[in-house]
Image (cartoon, rainbow, N blue to C red; front, side, top):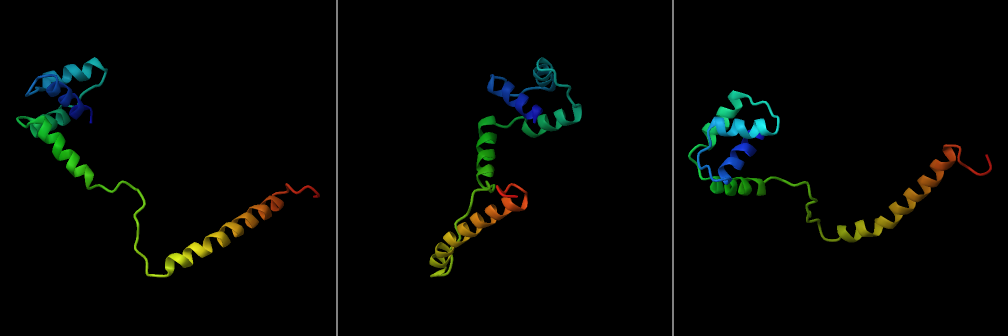
Length: 111
């Protein structure tokens, strides 16, 4: 990732075709040792490409990656009411369990 970021810095700074020497200079300025194989791979993949186009393609690809947000699932008619009706019961059960668990741990007032 350091190599890509350094390449982008050089390209956005006006260097339309950054060389390995340009990228090494950027990496050395922040104390990162470079790996020539990885550096050459990045240069070969990005050399001659318009950076703005590469970024736009990357954004489109990232848009298709799941983000971990909950997904709404369509349920059969009537199941929503059933689920809504069971929510208070579940909350009451959890409350009772938490009270019981305090007693089990020896935190009761009259032990």
